[in-house]
Length: 451
Image (tube, rainbow, N blue to C red; front, side):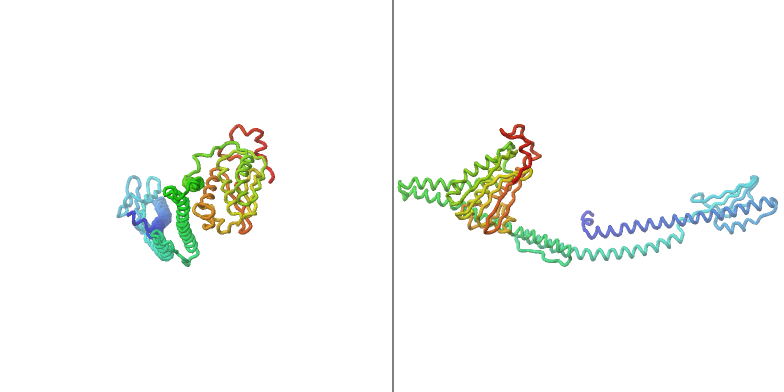
């Protein structure tokens, strides 16, 4: 029975027939009640007139015989009883049951006229009206069932097609698509379904590419380490070259360690158990990052410009550093020699903005929409050469989310990019500690400022 009612067609059928049956039953009782009301009112009026006529006759001619059969013919099947002085003057030939009766009693001096009328609960008029209503409802139900069949036929084909495509996708055929269905509403469903399938296929492709790149990234330092180890074992590396070999070994090990660290950070549900909320001198943090990356910029032939203003806010300095470090690393990596990288801290209303702008190669509009995906790399070949893993921005996005901040990006291919970390002054869900940094005041910290 449960399986029977799981069908949409069965539910529509029940939803159509059940109201029709209930309406038909209600119509029958309504017609019957109306007719009974009219019938009762009519019988009461007739009985009242007959009783009044008999009473007048008894009063005018108390001893004259009265032909009660005339009155009985007027009353029809109603029961007439006339008594006077304890004596029954007339009694109808048949006695009606004492259920469902309308009683009309007329008192005369020394006598009583009683008229009982049986109520017919199944009258012909009620049945006729109910039959007419049943025919009308039957036609309505028939039209409803035909419409339901047409709707179900229109629904079943797109749904069946979606099921077939879903089965193919589940089976590994990522090229399966629904395509247009003809109906506007289902076309929207098909379009959304195909977009989902396209995203699944793209994700699968990107993941395969990522695994290939990851294998390459791991293989490069491992091959270097293995080569150096073999050279040391077979003594092809001369003693005077051991120092250089040791340095190369350390560099390759550090590169592999960084890759593994990025993978571990990306795998963690959150970047830390909870942010370490504290008052932060953001300007000092930004200036320290500028000094740290200045030698890298000089080696790359770039100019690194740092601009700050004092801003104190409640945040986690380690997560801020992680995001901005990623911005700076990418800016130095993808900006040709002779270019400029600008690290800037400014205030915008109730937010602090740390931006890293470069004059590098820029990012295409298509890549900007997916560059923060964990398996996406805008330029795989360039990342292999420069040592990037394609994980940094995904990690940066998680760190920003943990801070209650957001990352913004403006970029034009061939002109450069600007990444911005927009930090709230004091996240409402994390109250600020009681003691701000030396020299800072809450009024100064939370007041809006210019750019």
